[in-house]
Length: 246
Length: 381
Image 1 (cartoon, each protein chain N blue to C red):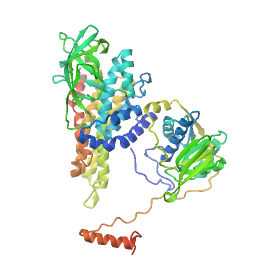
Image 2 (image 1 turned 90 degrees about the vertical axis):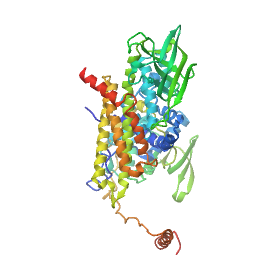
Image 3 (image 1 turned 90 degrees about the horizontal axis):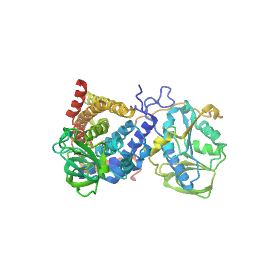
Image 4 (image 1 turned 60 degrees about the vertical axis):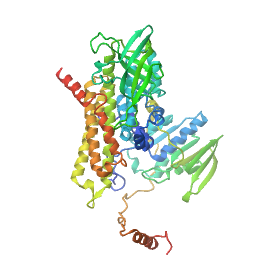
């Protein structure tokens, strides 16, 4: 049963009771891109990492069923209280001695939405990074990435690996994990590391309040015949918006 | 006792639901209107997901999942399109499964594996004008002629017929034997000379799933296509229907859930007398009953599926689950139409189709009356 999304008792996060959980959508694009890159280069090994309670094992199995080779759960029941710098520090500590050629992260999480973790990890590992990637191609150690800027503007960035990319929605079409692969994911390696082994940073910020925006007034219902309605609408657009000039 | 899905079962639900909503749902109303079976979408795409061999071992190119996963897959497909749900259910439960349960190694290699891979679509021929609930009334005959069997007769109301490549067919091989003992099961391939298709039915519901008559006229098949023992066809049919009931119960459950979801979404949006209609107890009590009945049906369906996977007897559990789920589907879809009112009665909203689709679940794979007979006779035996 799924309950309604609401702010928790402490007022600093949301109430997780009875929520249905699934993979962060941005991460699905990151995983798909990693698996596509592996399929392209052949000799590659993809590790998927997720920080959280045992609840994260199910989305990690999805990642394994989509084609990742192994999973690493950084076991942390209190992950929702951690801020982006701490999260990034955990990932960077894990990745530091692994020599990953490419790291893909979601552009942001769907809950906290800071969009900081990926780029912070890159900084901590001293890697170049490209954020908000909407197209990715790899050739001989070089990557051409298209990124999305405000207002629909795009930019093309070329760089050498190792590098980190934060993935925007629409980067690719994440595959459905097939049933045989879901069953086989059971047999893939899924490591669990206590968060204490990897967390080396102190929190630098604290979320003090989470709240729903105040309800604005309801919509305005116009009445009258068509000519009157059109007249009223034009008047409102002129007076209350910048759609029509006065 | 654990009432929680495993991580795999839960992932299978998420995957099939995402797939069903994104790929199957958008064309469901139009396919219903056109009475069109879209094989690429309703079967080939299921094969790509690995659904067409879901319960069979990897050895036969199946996914190696359990019956609960199968029930969930049929449920989630049927939640948006009952025609797609029954396509998979008939393929798995009625054609591939009897070959898995009763087939020789050669039959499993030759027929089950291509069915599981989804290269071939399966169907099952039991019902005749004078046989259906009464499998012993089978009039279609098979007589031995050297290294072949020759089939004569016809079968009606065959799901997937016409498009399917592999058919499991019941025929009388011994006219002298007592009613239930003279029947045998055979595997017949589309394209065999003497095997043709008759009338395509125009139906009230599941209109996107083809239902046809199949006809045998001096149709010769290899002796090696006898499925199970000669004279053992009644047992094949009964075992097949036990499994089939889980499939149809899951289809009914999916229809009920689909209608409930539609009714809840609508009731939250719809305002009358300046209030959302959920503020009226008349509506919210109805929704509460629909949700409660659907959840009860779900527990019974998953219980039957669990028993099938655990190797426990499940004849009675699947009959009860099918009875409960199909009658729930009929009730819940009817209530959903009522909640949507005038809109519910139009084809602009899916509950009208769901109500038409629900009716068949009380009829095929054993009518509700037959389920009561199965349950009742087990109680008083």
